[in-house]
Amino acid sequence: MVEAVLIDLFSLPANLQNNIQGLLHNTLETIEKCSSIPAPFVYVICCQRQGSERNGEQESLLPALSDFQSLKKRLEVVRCLTTAAALYTIKQRLDEKDLSIIKVILPTSRKDLMKVYIDHLFTAVYQFEFEDLHVASGCENLQIAKPQSEGQTFPTQDVAFIRSEIQMYLESLPSLKGELTILRSSLIPDDVFLHGFTTRTGGISYIPTLSSCNLFSSSKRRDPQVVVKENLRRLANAAGFNLETFHRVKIDHANAVCIMGKTEPDSYDGIVTNQKGVTIAAPGADCIPVLFADPVRKACGAAHSGWKGTLLGVSMATVNAMVSEYGCNVKDILVVLGPSVGPCCYKLPHESAKEFHRIDPKCVRLFDSASPHIDIRRATRILLESGGILPENIQDDSVTDQNENITFCTACHPDKFYSHFRDGTNFGTQIGFISIKD
Image (tube, rainbow, N blue to C red; front, side, top):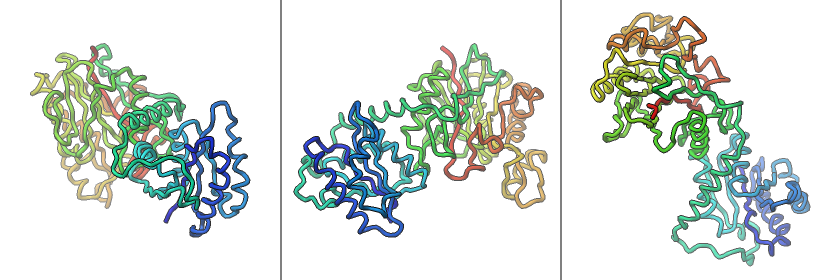
């Protein structure tokens, strides 16, 4: 069932402005007659002319809107300078109401164009269907523009223009939840390495569980790639790294490691490099983003370590890759564990908890319960120390000076971090990143 209707009047030329009242009236009449109860939310897109008042379009359409009492409280005119701005505004309205099934009523000539905007600004969470404005309004003789021929490819330059328009609009948006904040470790020498762990502030993501500096997009979440890309651009500017040489792991919850400069695996949870100016990163939203730095051989690594990856030894796999590929001495490698879910909050089924108990009984709390509390950080430290990493070269939540602590519990700090455990499936993602300075 359609939950929202978008009526696209954005491109109507000046010679049709006198007909817009009747056009909109007829379209709304069709919607009202065909709607179930409750009626869908209706959004009308109009172009805001340069220098005109924002509420002028709403007032000019009042006569056409006044007859539809059943739609009145569910109808909004969205007037913006660009289609990107209008659609992003409507997306915010849809997300506020958790709506995802949308009918778009528009001139046939705008359909391919609209699909490009939608592909960039929305994700697979949303379902769209399209209807010709001529049919919906009953104005079969209305001539707006000739549509493209069936099967004709949408011009590449038009796609590039749309991307540019979207990017410019997103760049103009204010940061949410305050300034962008990066946590840094004093263990990693800043004269050799650029590094940090992100928090959730300073981006443009507005959905509560994703706000505001979400750095991962998927088909199951409402944050599109263009928003994540803008958040990442702001991070790169604040941190000082080059987005053109930025690489993050491709998560598999396992222990494969990518060696920069060699054939990239299809998926991997660790990544290493000795190339200057190349920034590598690992995500986390309860899982541990782990950073590795060897100031002697000037090499670095990053790993995503969830409970499965921890048990499979992804951290030591990353260390071993640095040793074998770059000649690192394991005693020179520094390791920092970033924000992640703590044993205060993290639980696993008893069968999985047994694996951590075998590493060290202290990794499990309330072992006899159905869902014991798990300390994946302690397990990571023990496995690293067993592999030869010096205890003093590992920074985690065991630091004595809490002013130096950056391994906060993600689930306990909703104002600072994302958490899958706390927020459910539509969770945001932070990252740990590192590079060798030029």
